[in-house]
Structures are given as structure tokens and as C-alpha cells.
Length: 178
Image (cartoon, rainbow, N blue to C red):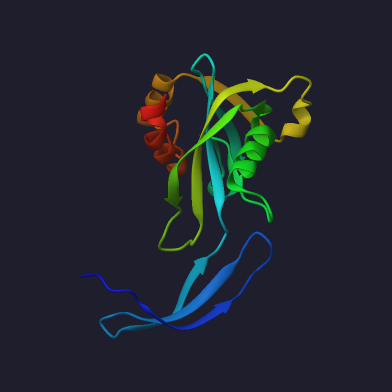
């Protein structure tokens, strides 16, 4: 049976708002001690799988500094203080795409890199999404909206055009509802 590690010490070493680092001293069940095991805590987030009334899938293409690449993914982001998961899903969908949804369905929770990050992501299916009229494209952010169909998402995953892991996992959760 797999046993938990025992935490001997825990120290927050934040390098700023976008880099919350935690240093642990731990003891493994084998007795081995690790004095400097680091993790991050980016908090909880949401990912939205948006589907139009016509069955089209809405995705976003955006630059990601950490991997120095433009990625293709579902809209996602952190839950702000005082915000519900569904409010965050609605906000992120609008901020990144300019679309609004009539209905959200919770699909499940994902854990981001559990060896190094304590963050969890709630995945939502957004139904009947439509472009919000009068949206200023410059206010949406540095994203490009991509409209595809469900087969197109699968094809882009298999071709390596979608590489973001949470998007692939969210696609798996949403498949039976689309």
C-alpha cells in the first residue's frame, strides 16, 4: 500500500503574485528525508469546453511564455477571490473569446502536475455559446478564437497541434456530452 510522506517543515517562499513557491522538508515512508522539496500553489482554476448551438467547438490560440509557444487550448484561468467556479468559467470564456454561454455543466476536476503543483481545475461544458455582440476585440486579450468541430479537436490532438494536457483531459471528459 502506498503511504503518504510525512511533512517535517513547510515554508512559503513566494517570489511574487505569479510564483507562489513552497519549500518542504519531508520524510518518506522508507525513512529517507528530503530537506528541499519544492512545489507551487497556483490555486484553483477552471477550464471551459464551449459548444455552440450548431455543435461547433470554440478554442483559443495564445502565446505561452513558459514554453515559448503559441498553444491551442480551451479557455481557462484562475478562480478569483469571492468568485464561484461557474462565475469564473463564465468570465474566462468571455475574456478569452468574447462568447457567452446559456448553460454550464460541471464535468469533473483535474489535478495539474500533482508532483509539483497543488492546483486543481474544474472542467465545465458551456452549452449554447454565442458571440456577444459589440465586443471590442482588443479587450478580449491576446488570443485568436478558433472554431472547429469535435472531429477537428481529435484530429489536432492526434497530429500534435494541441499539446496542452488539460485541454486533452477536458476533451476526454466532454466527449460523451457532445
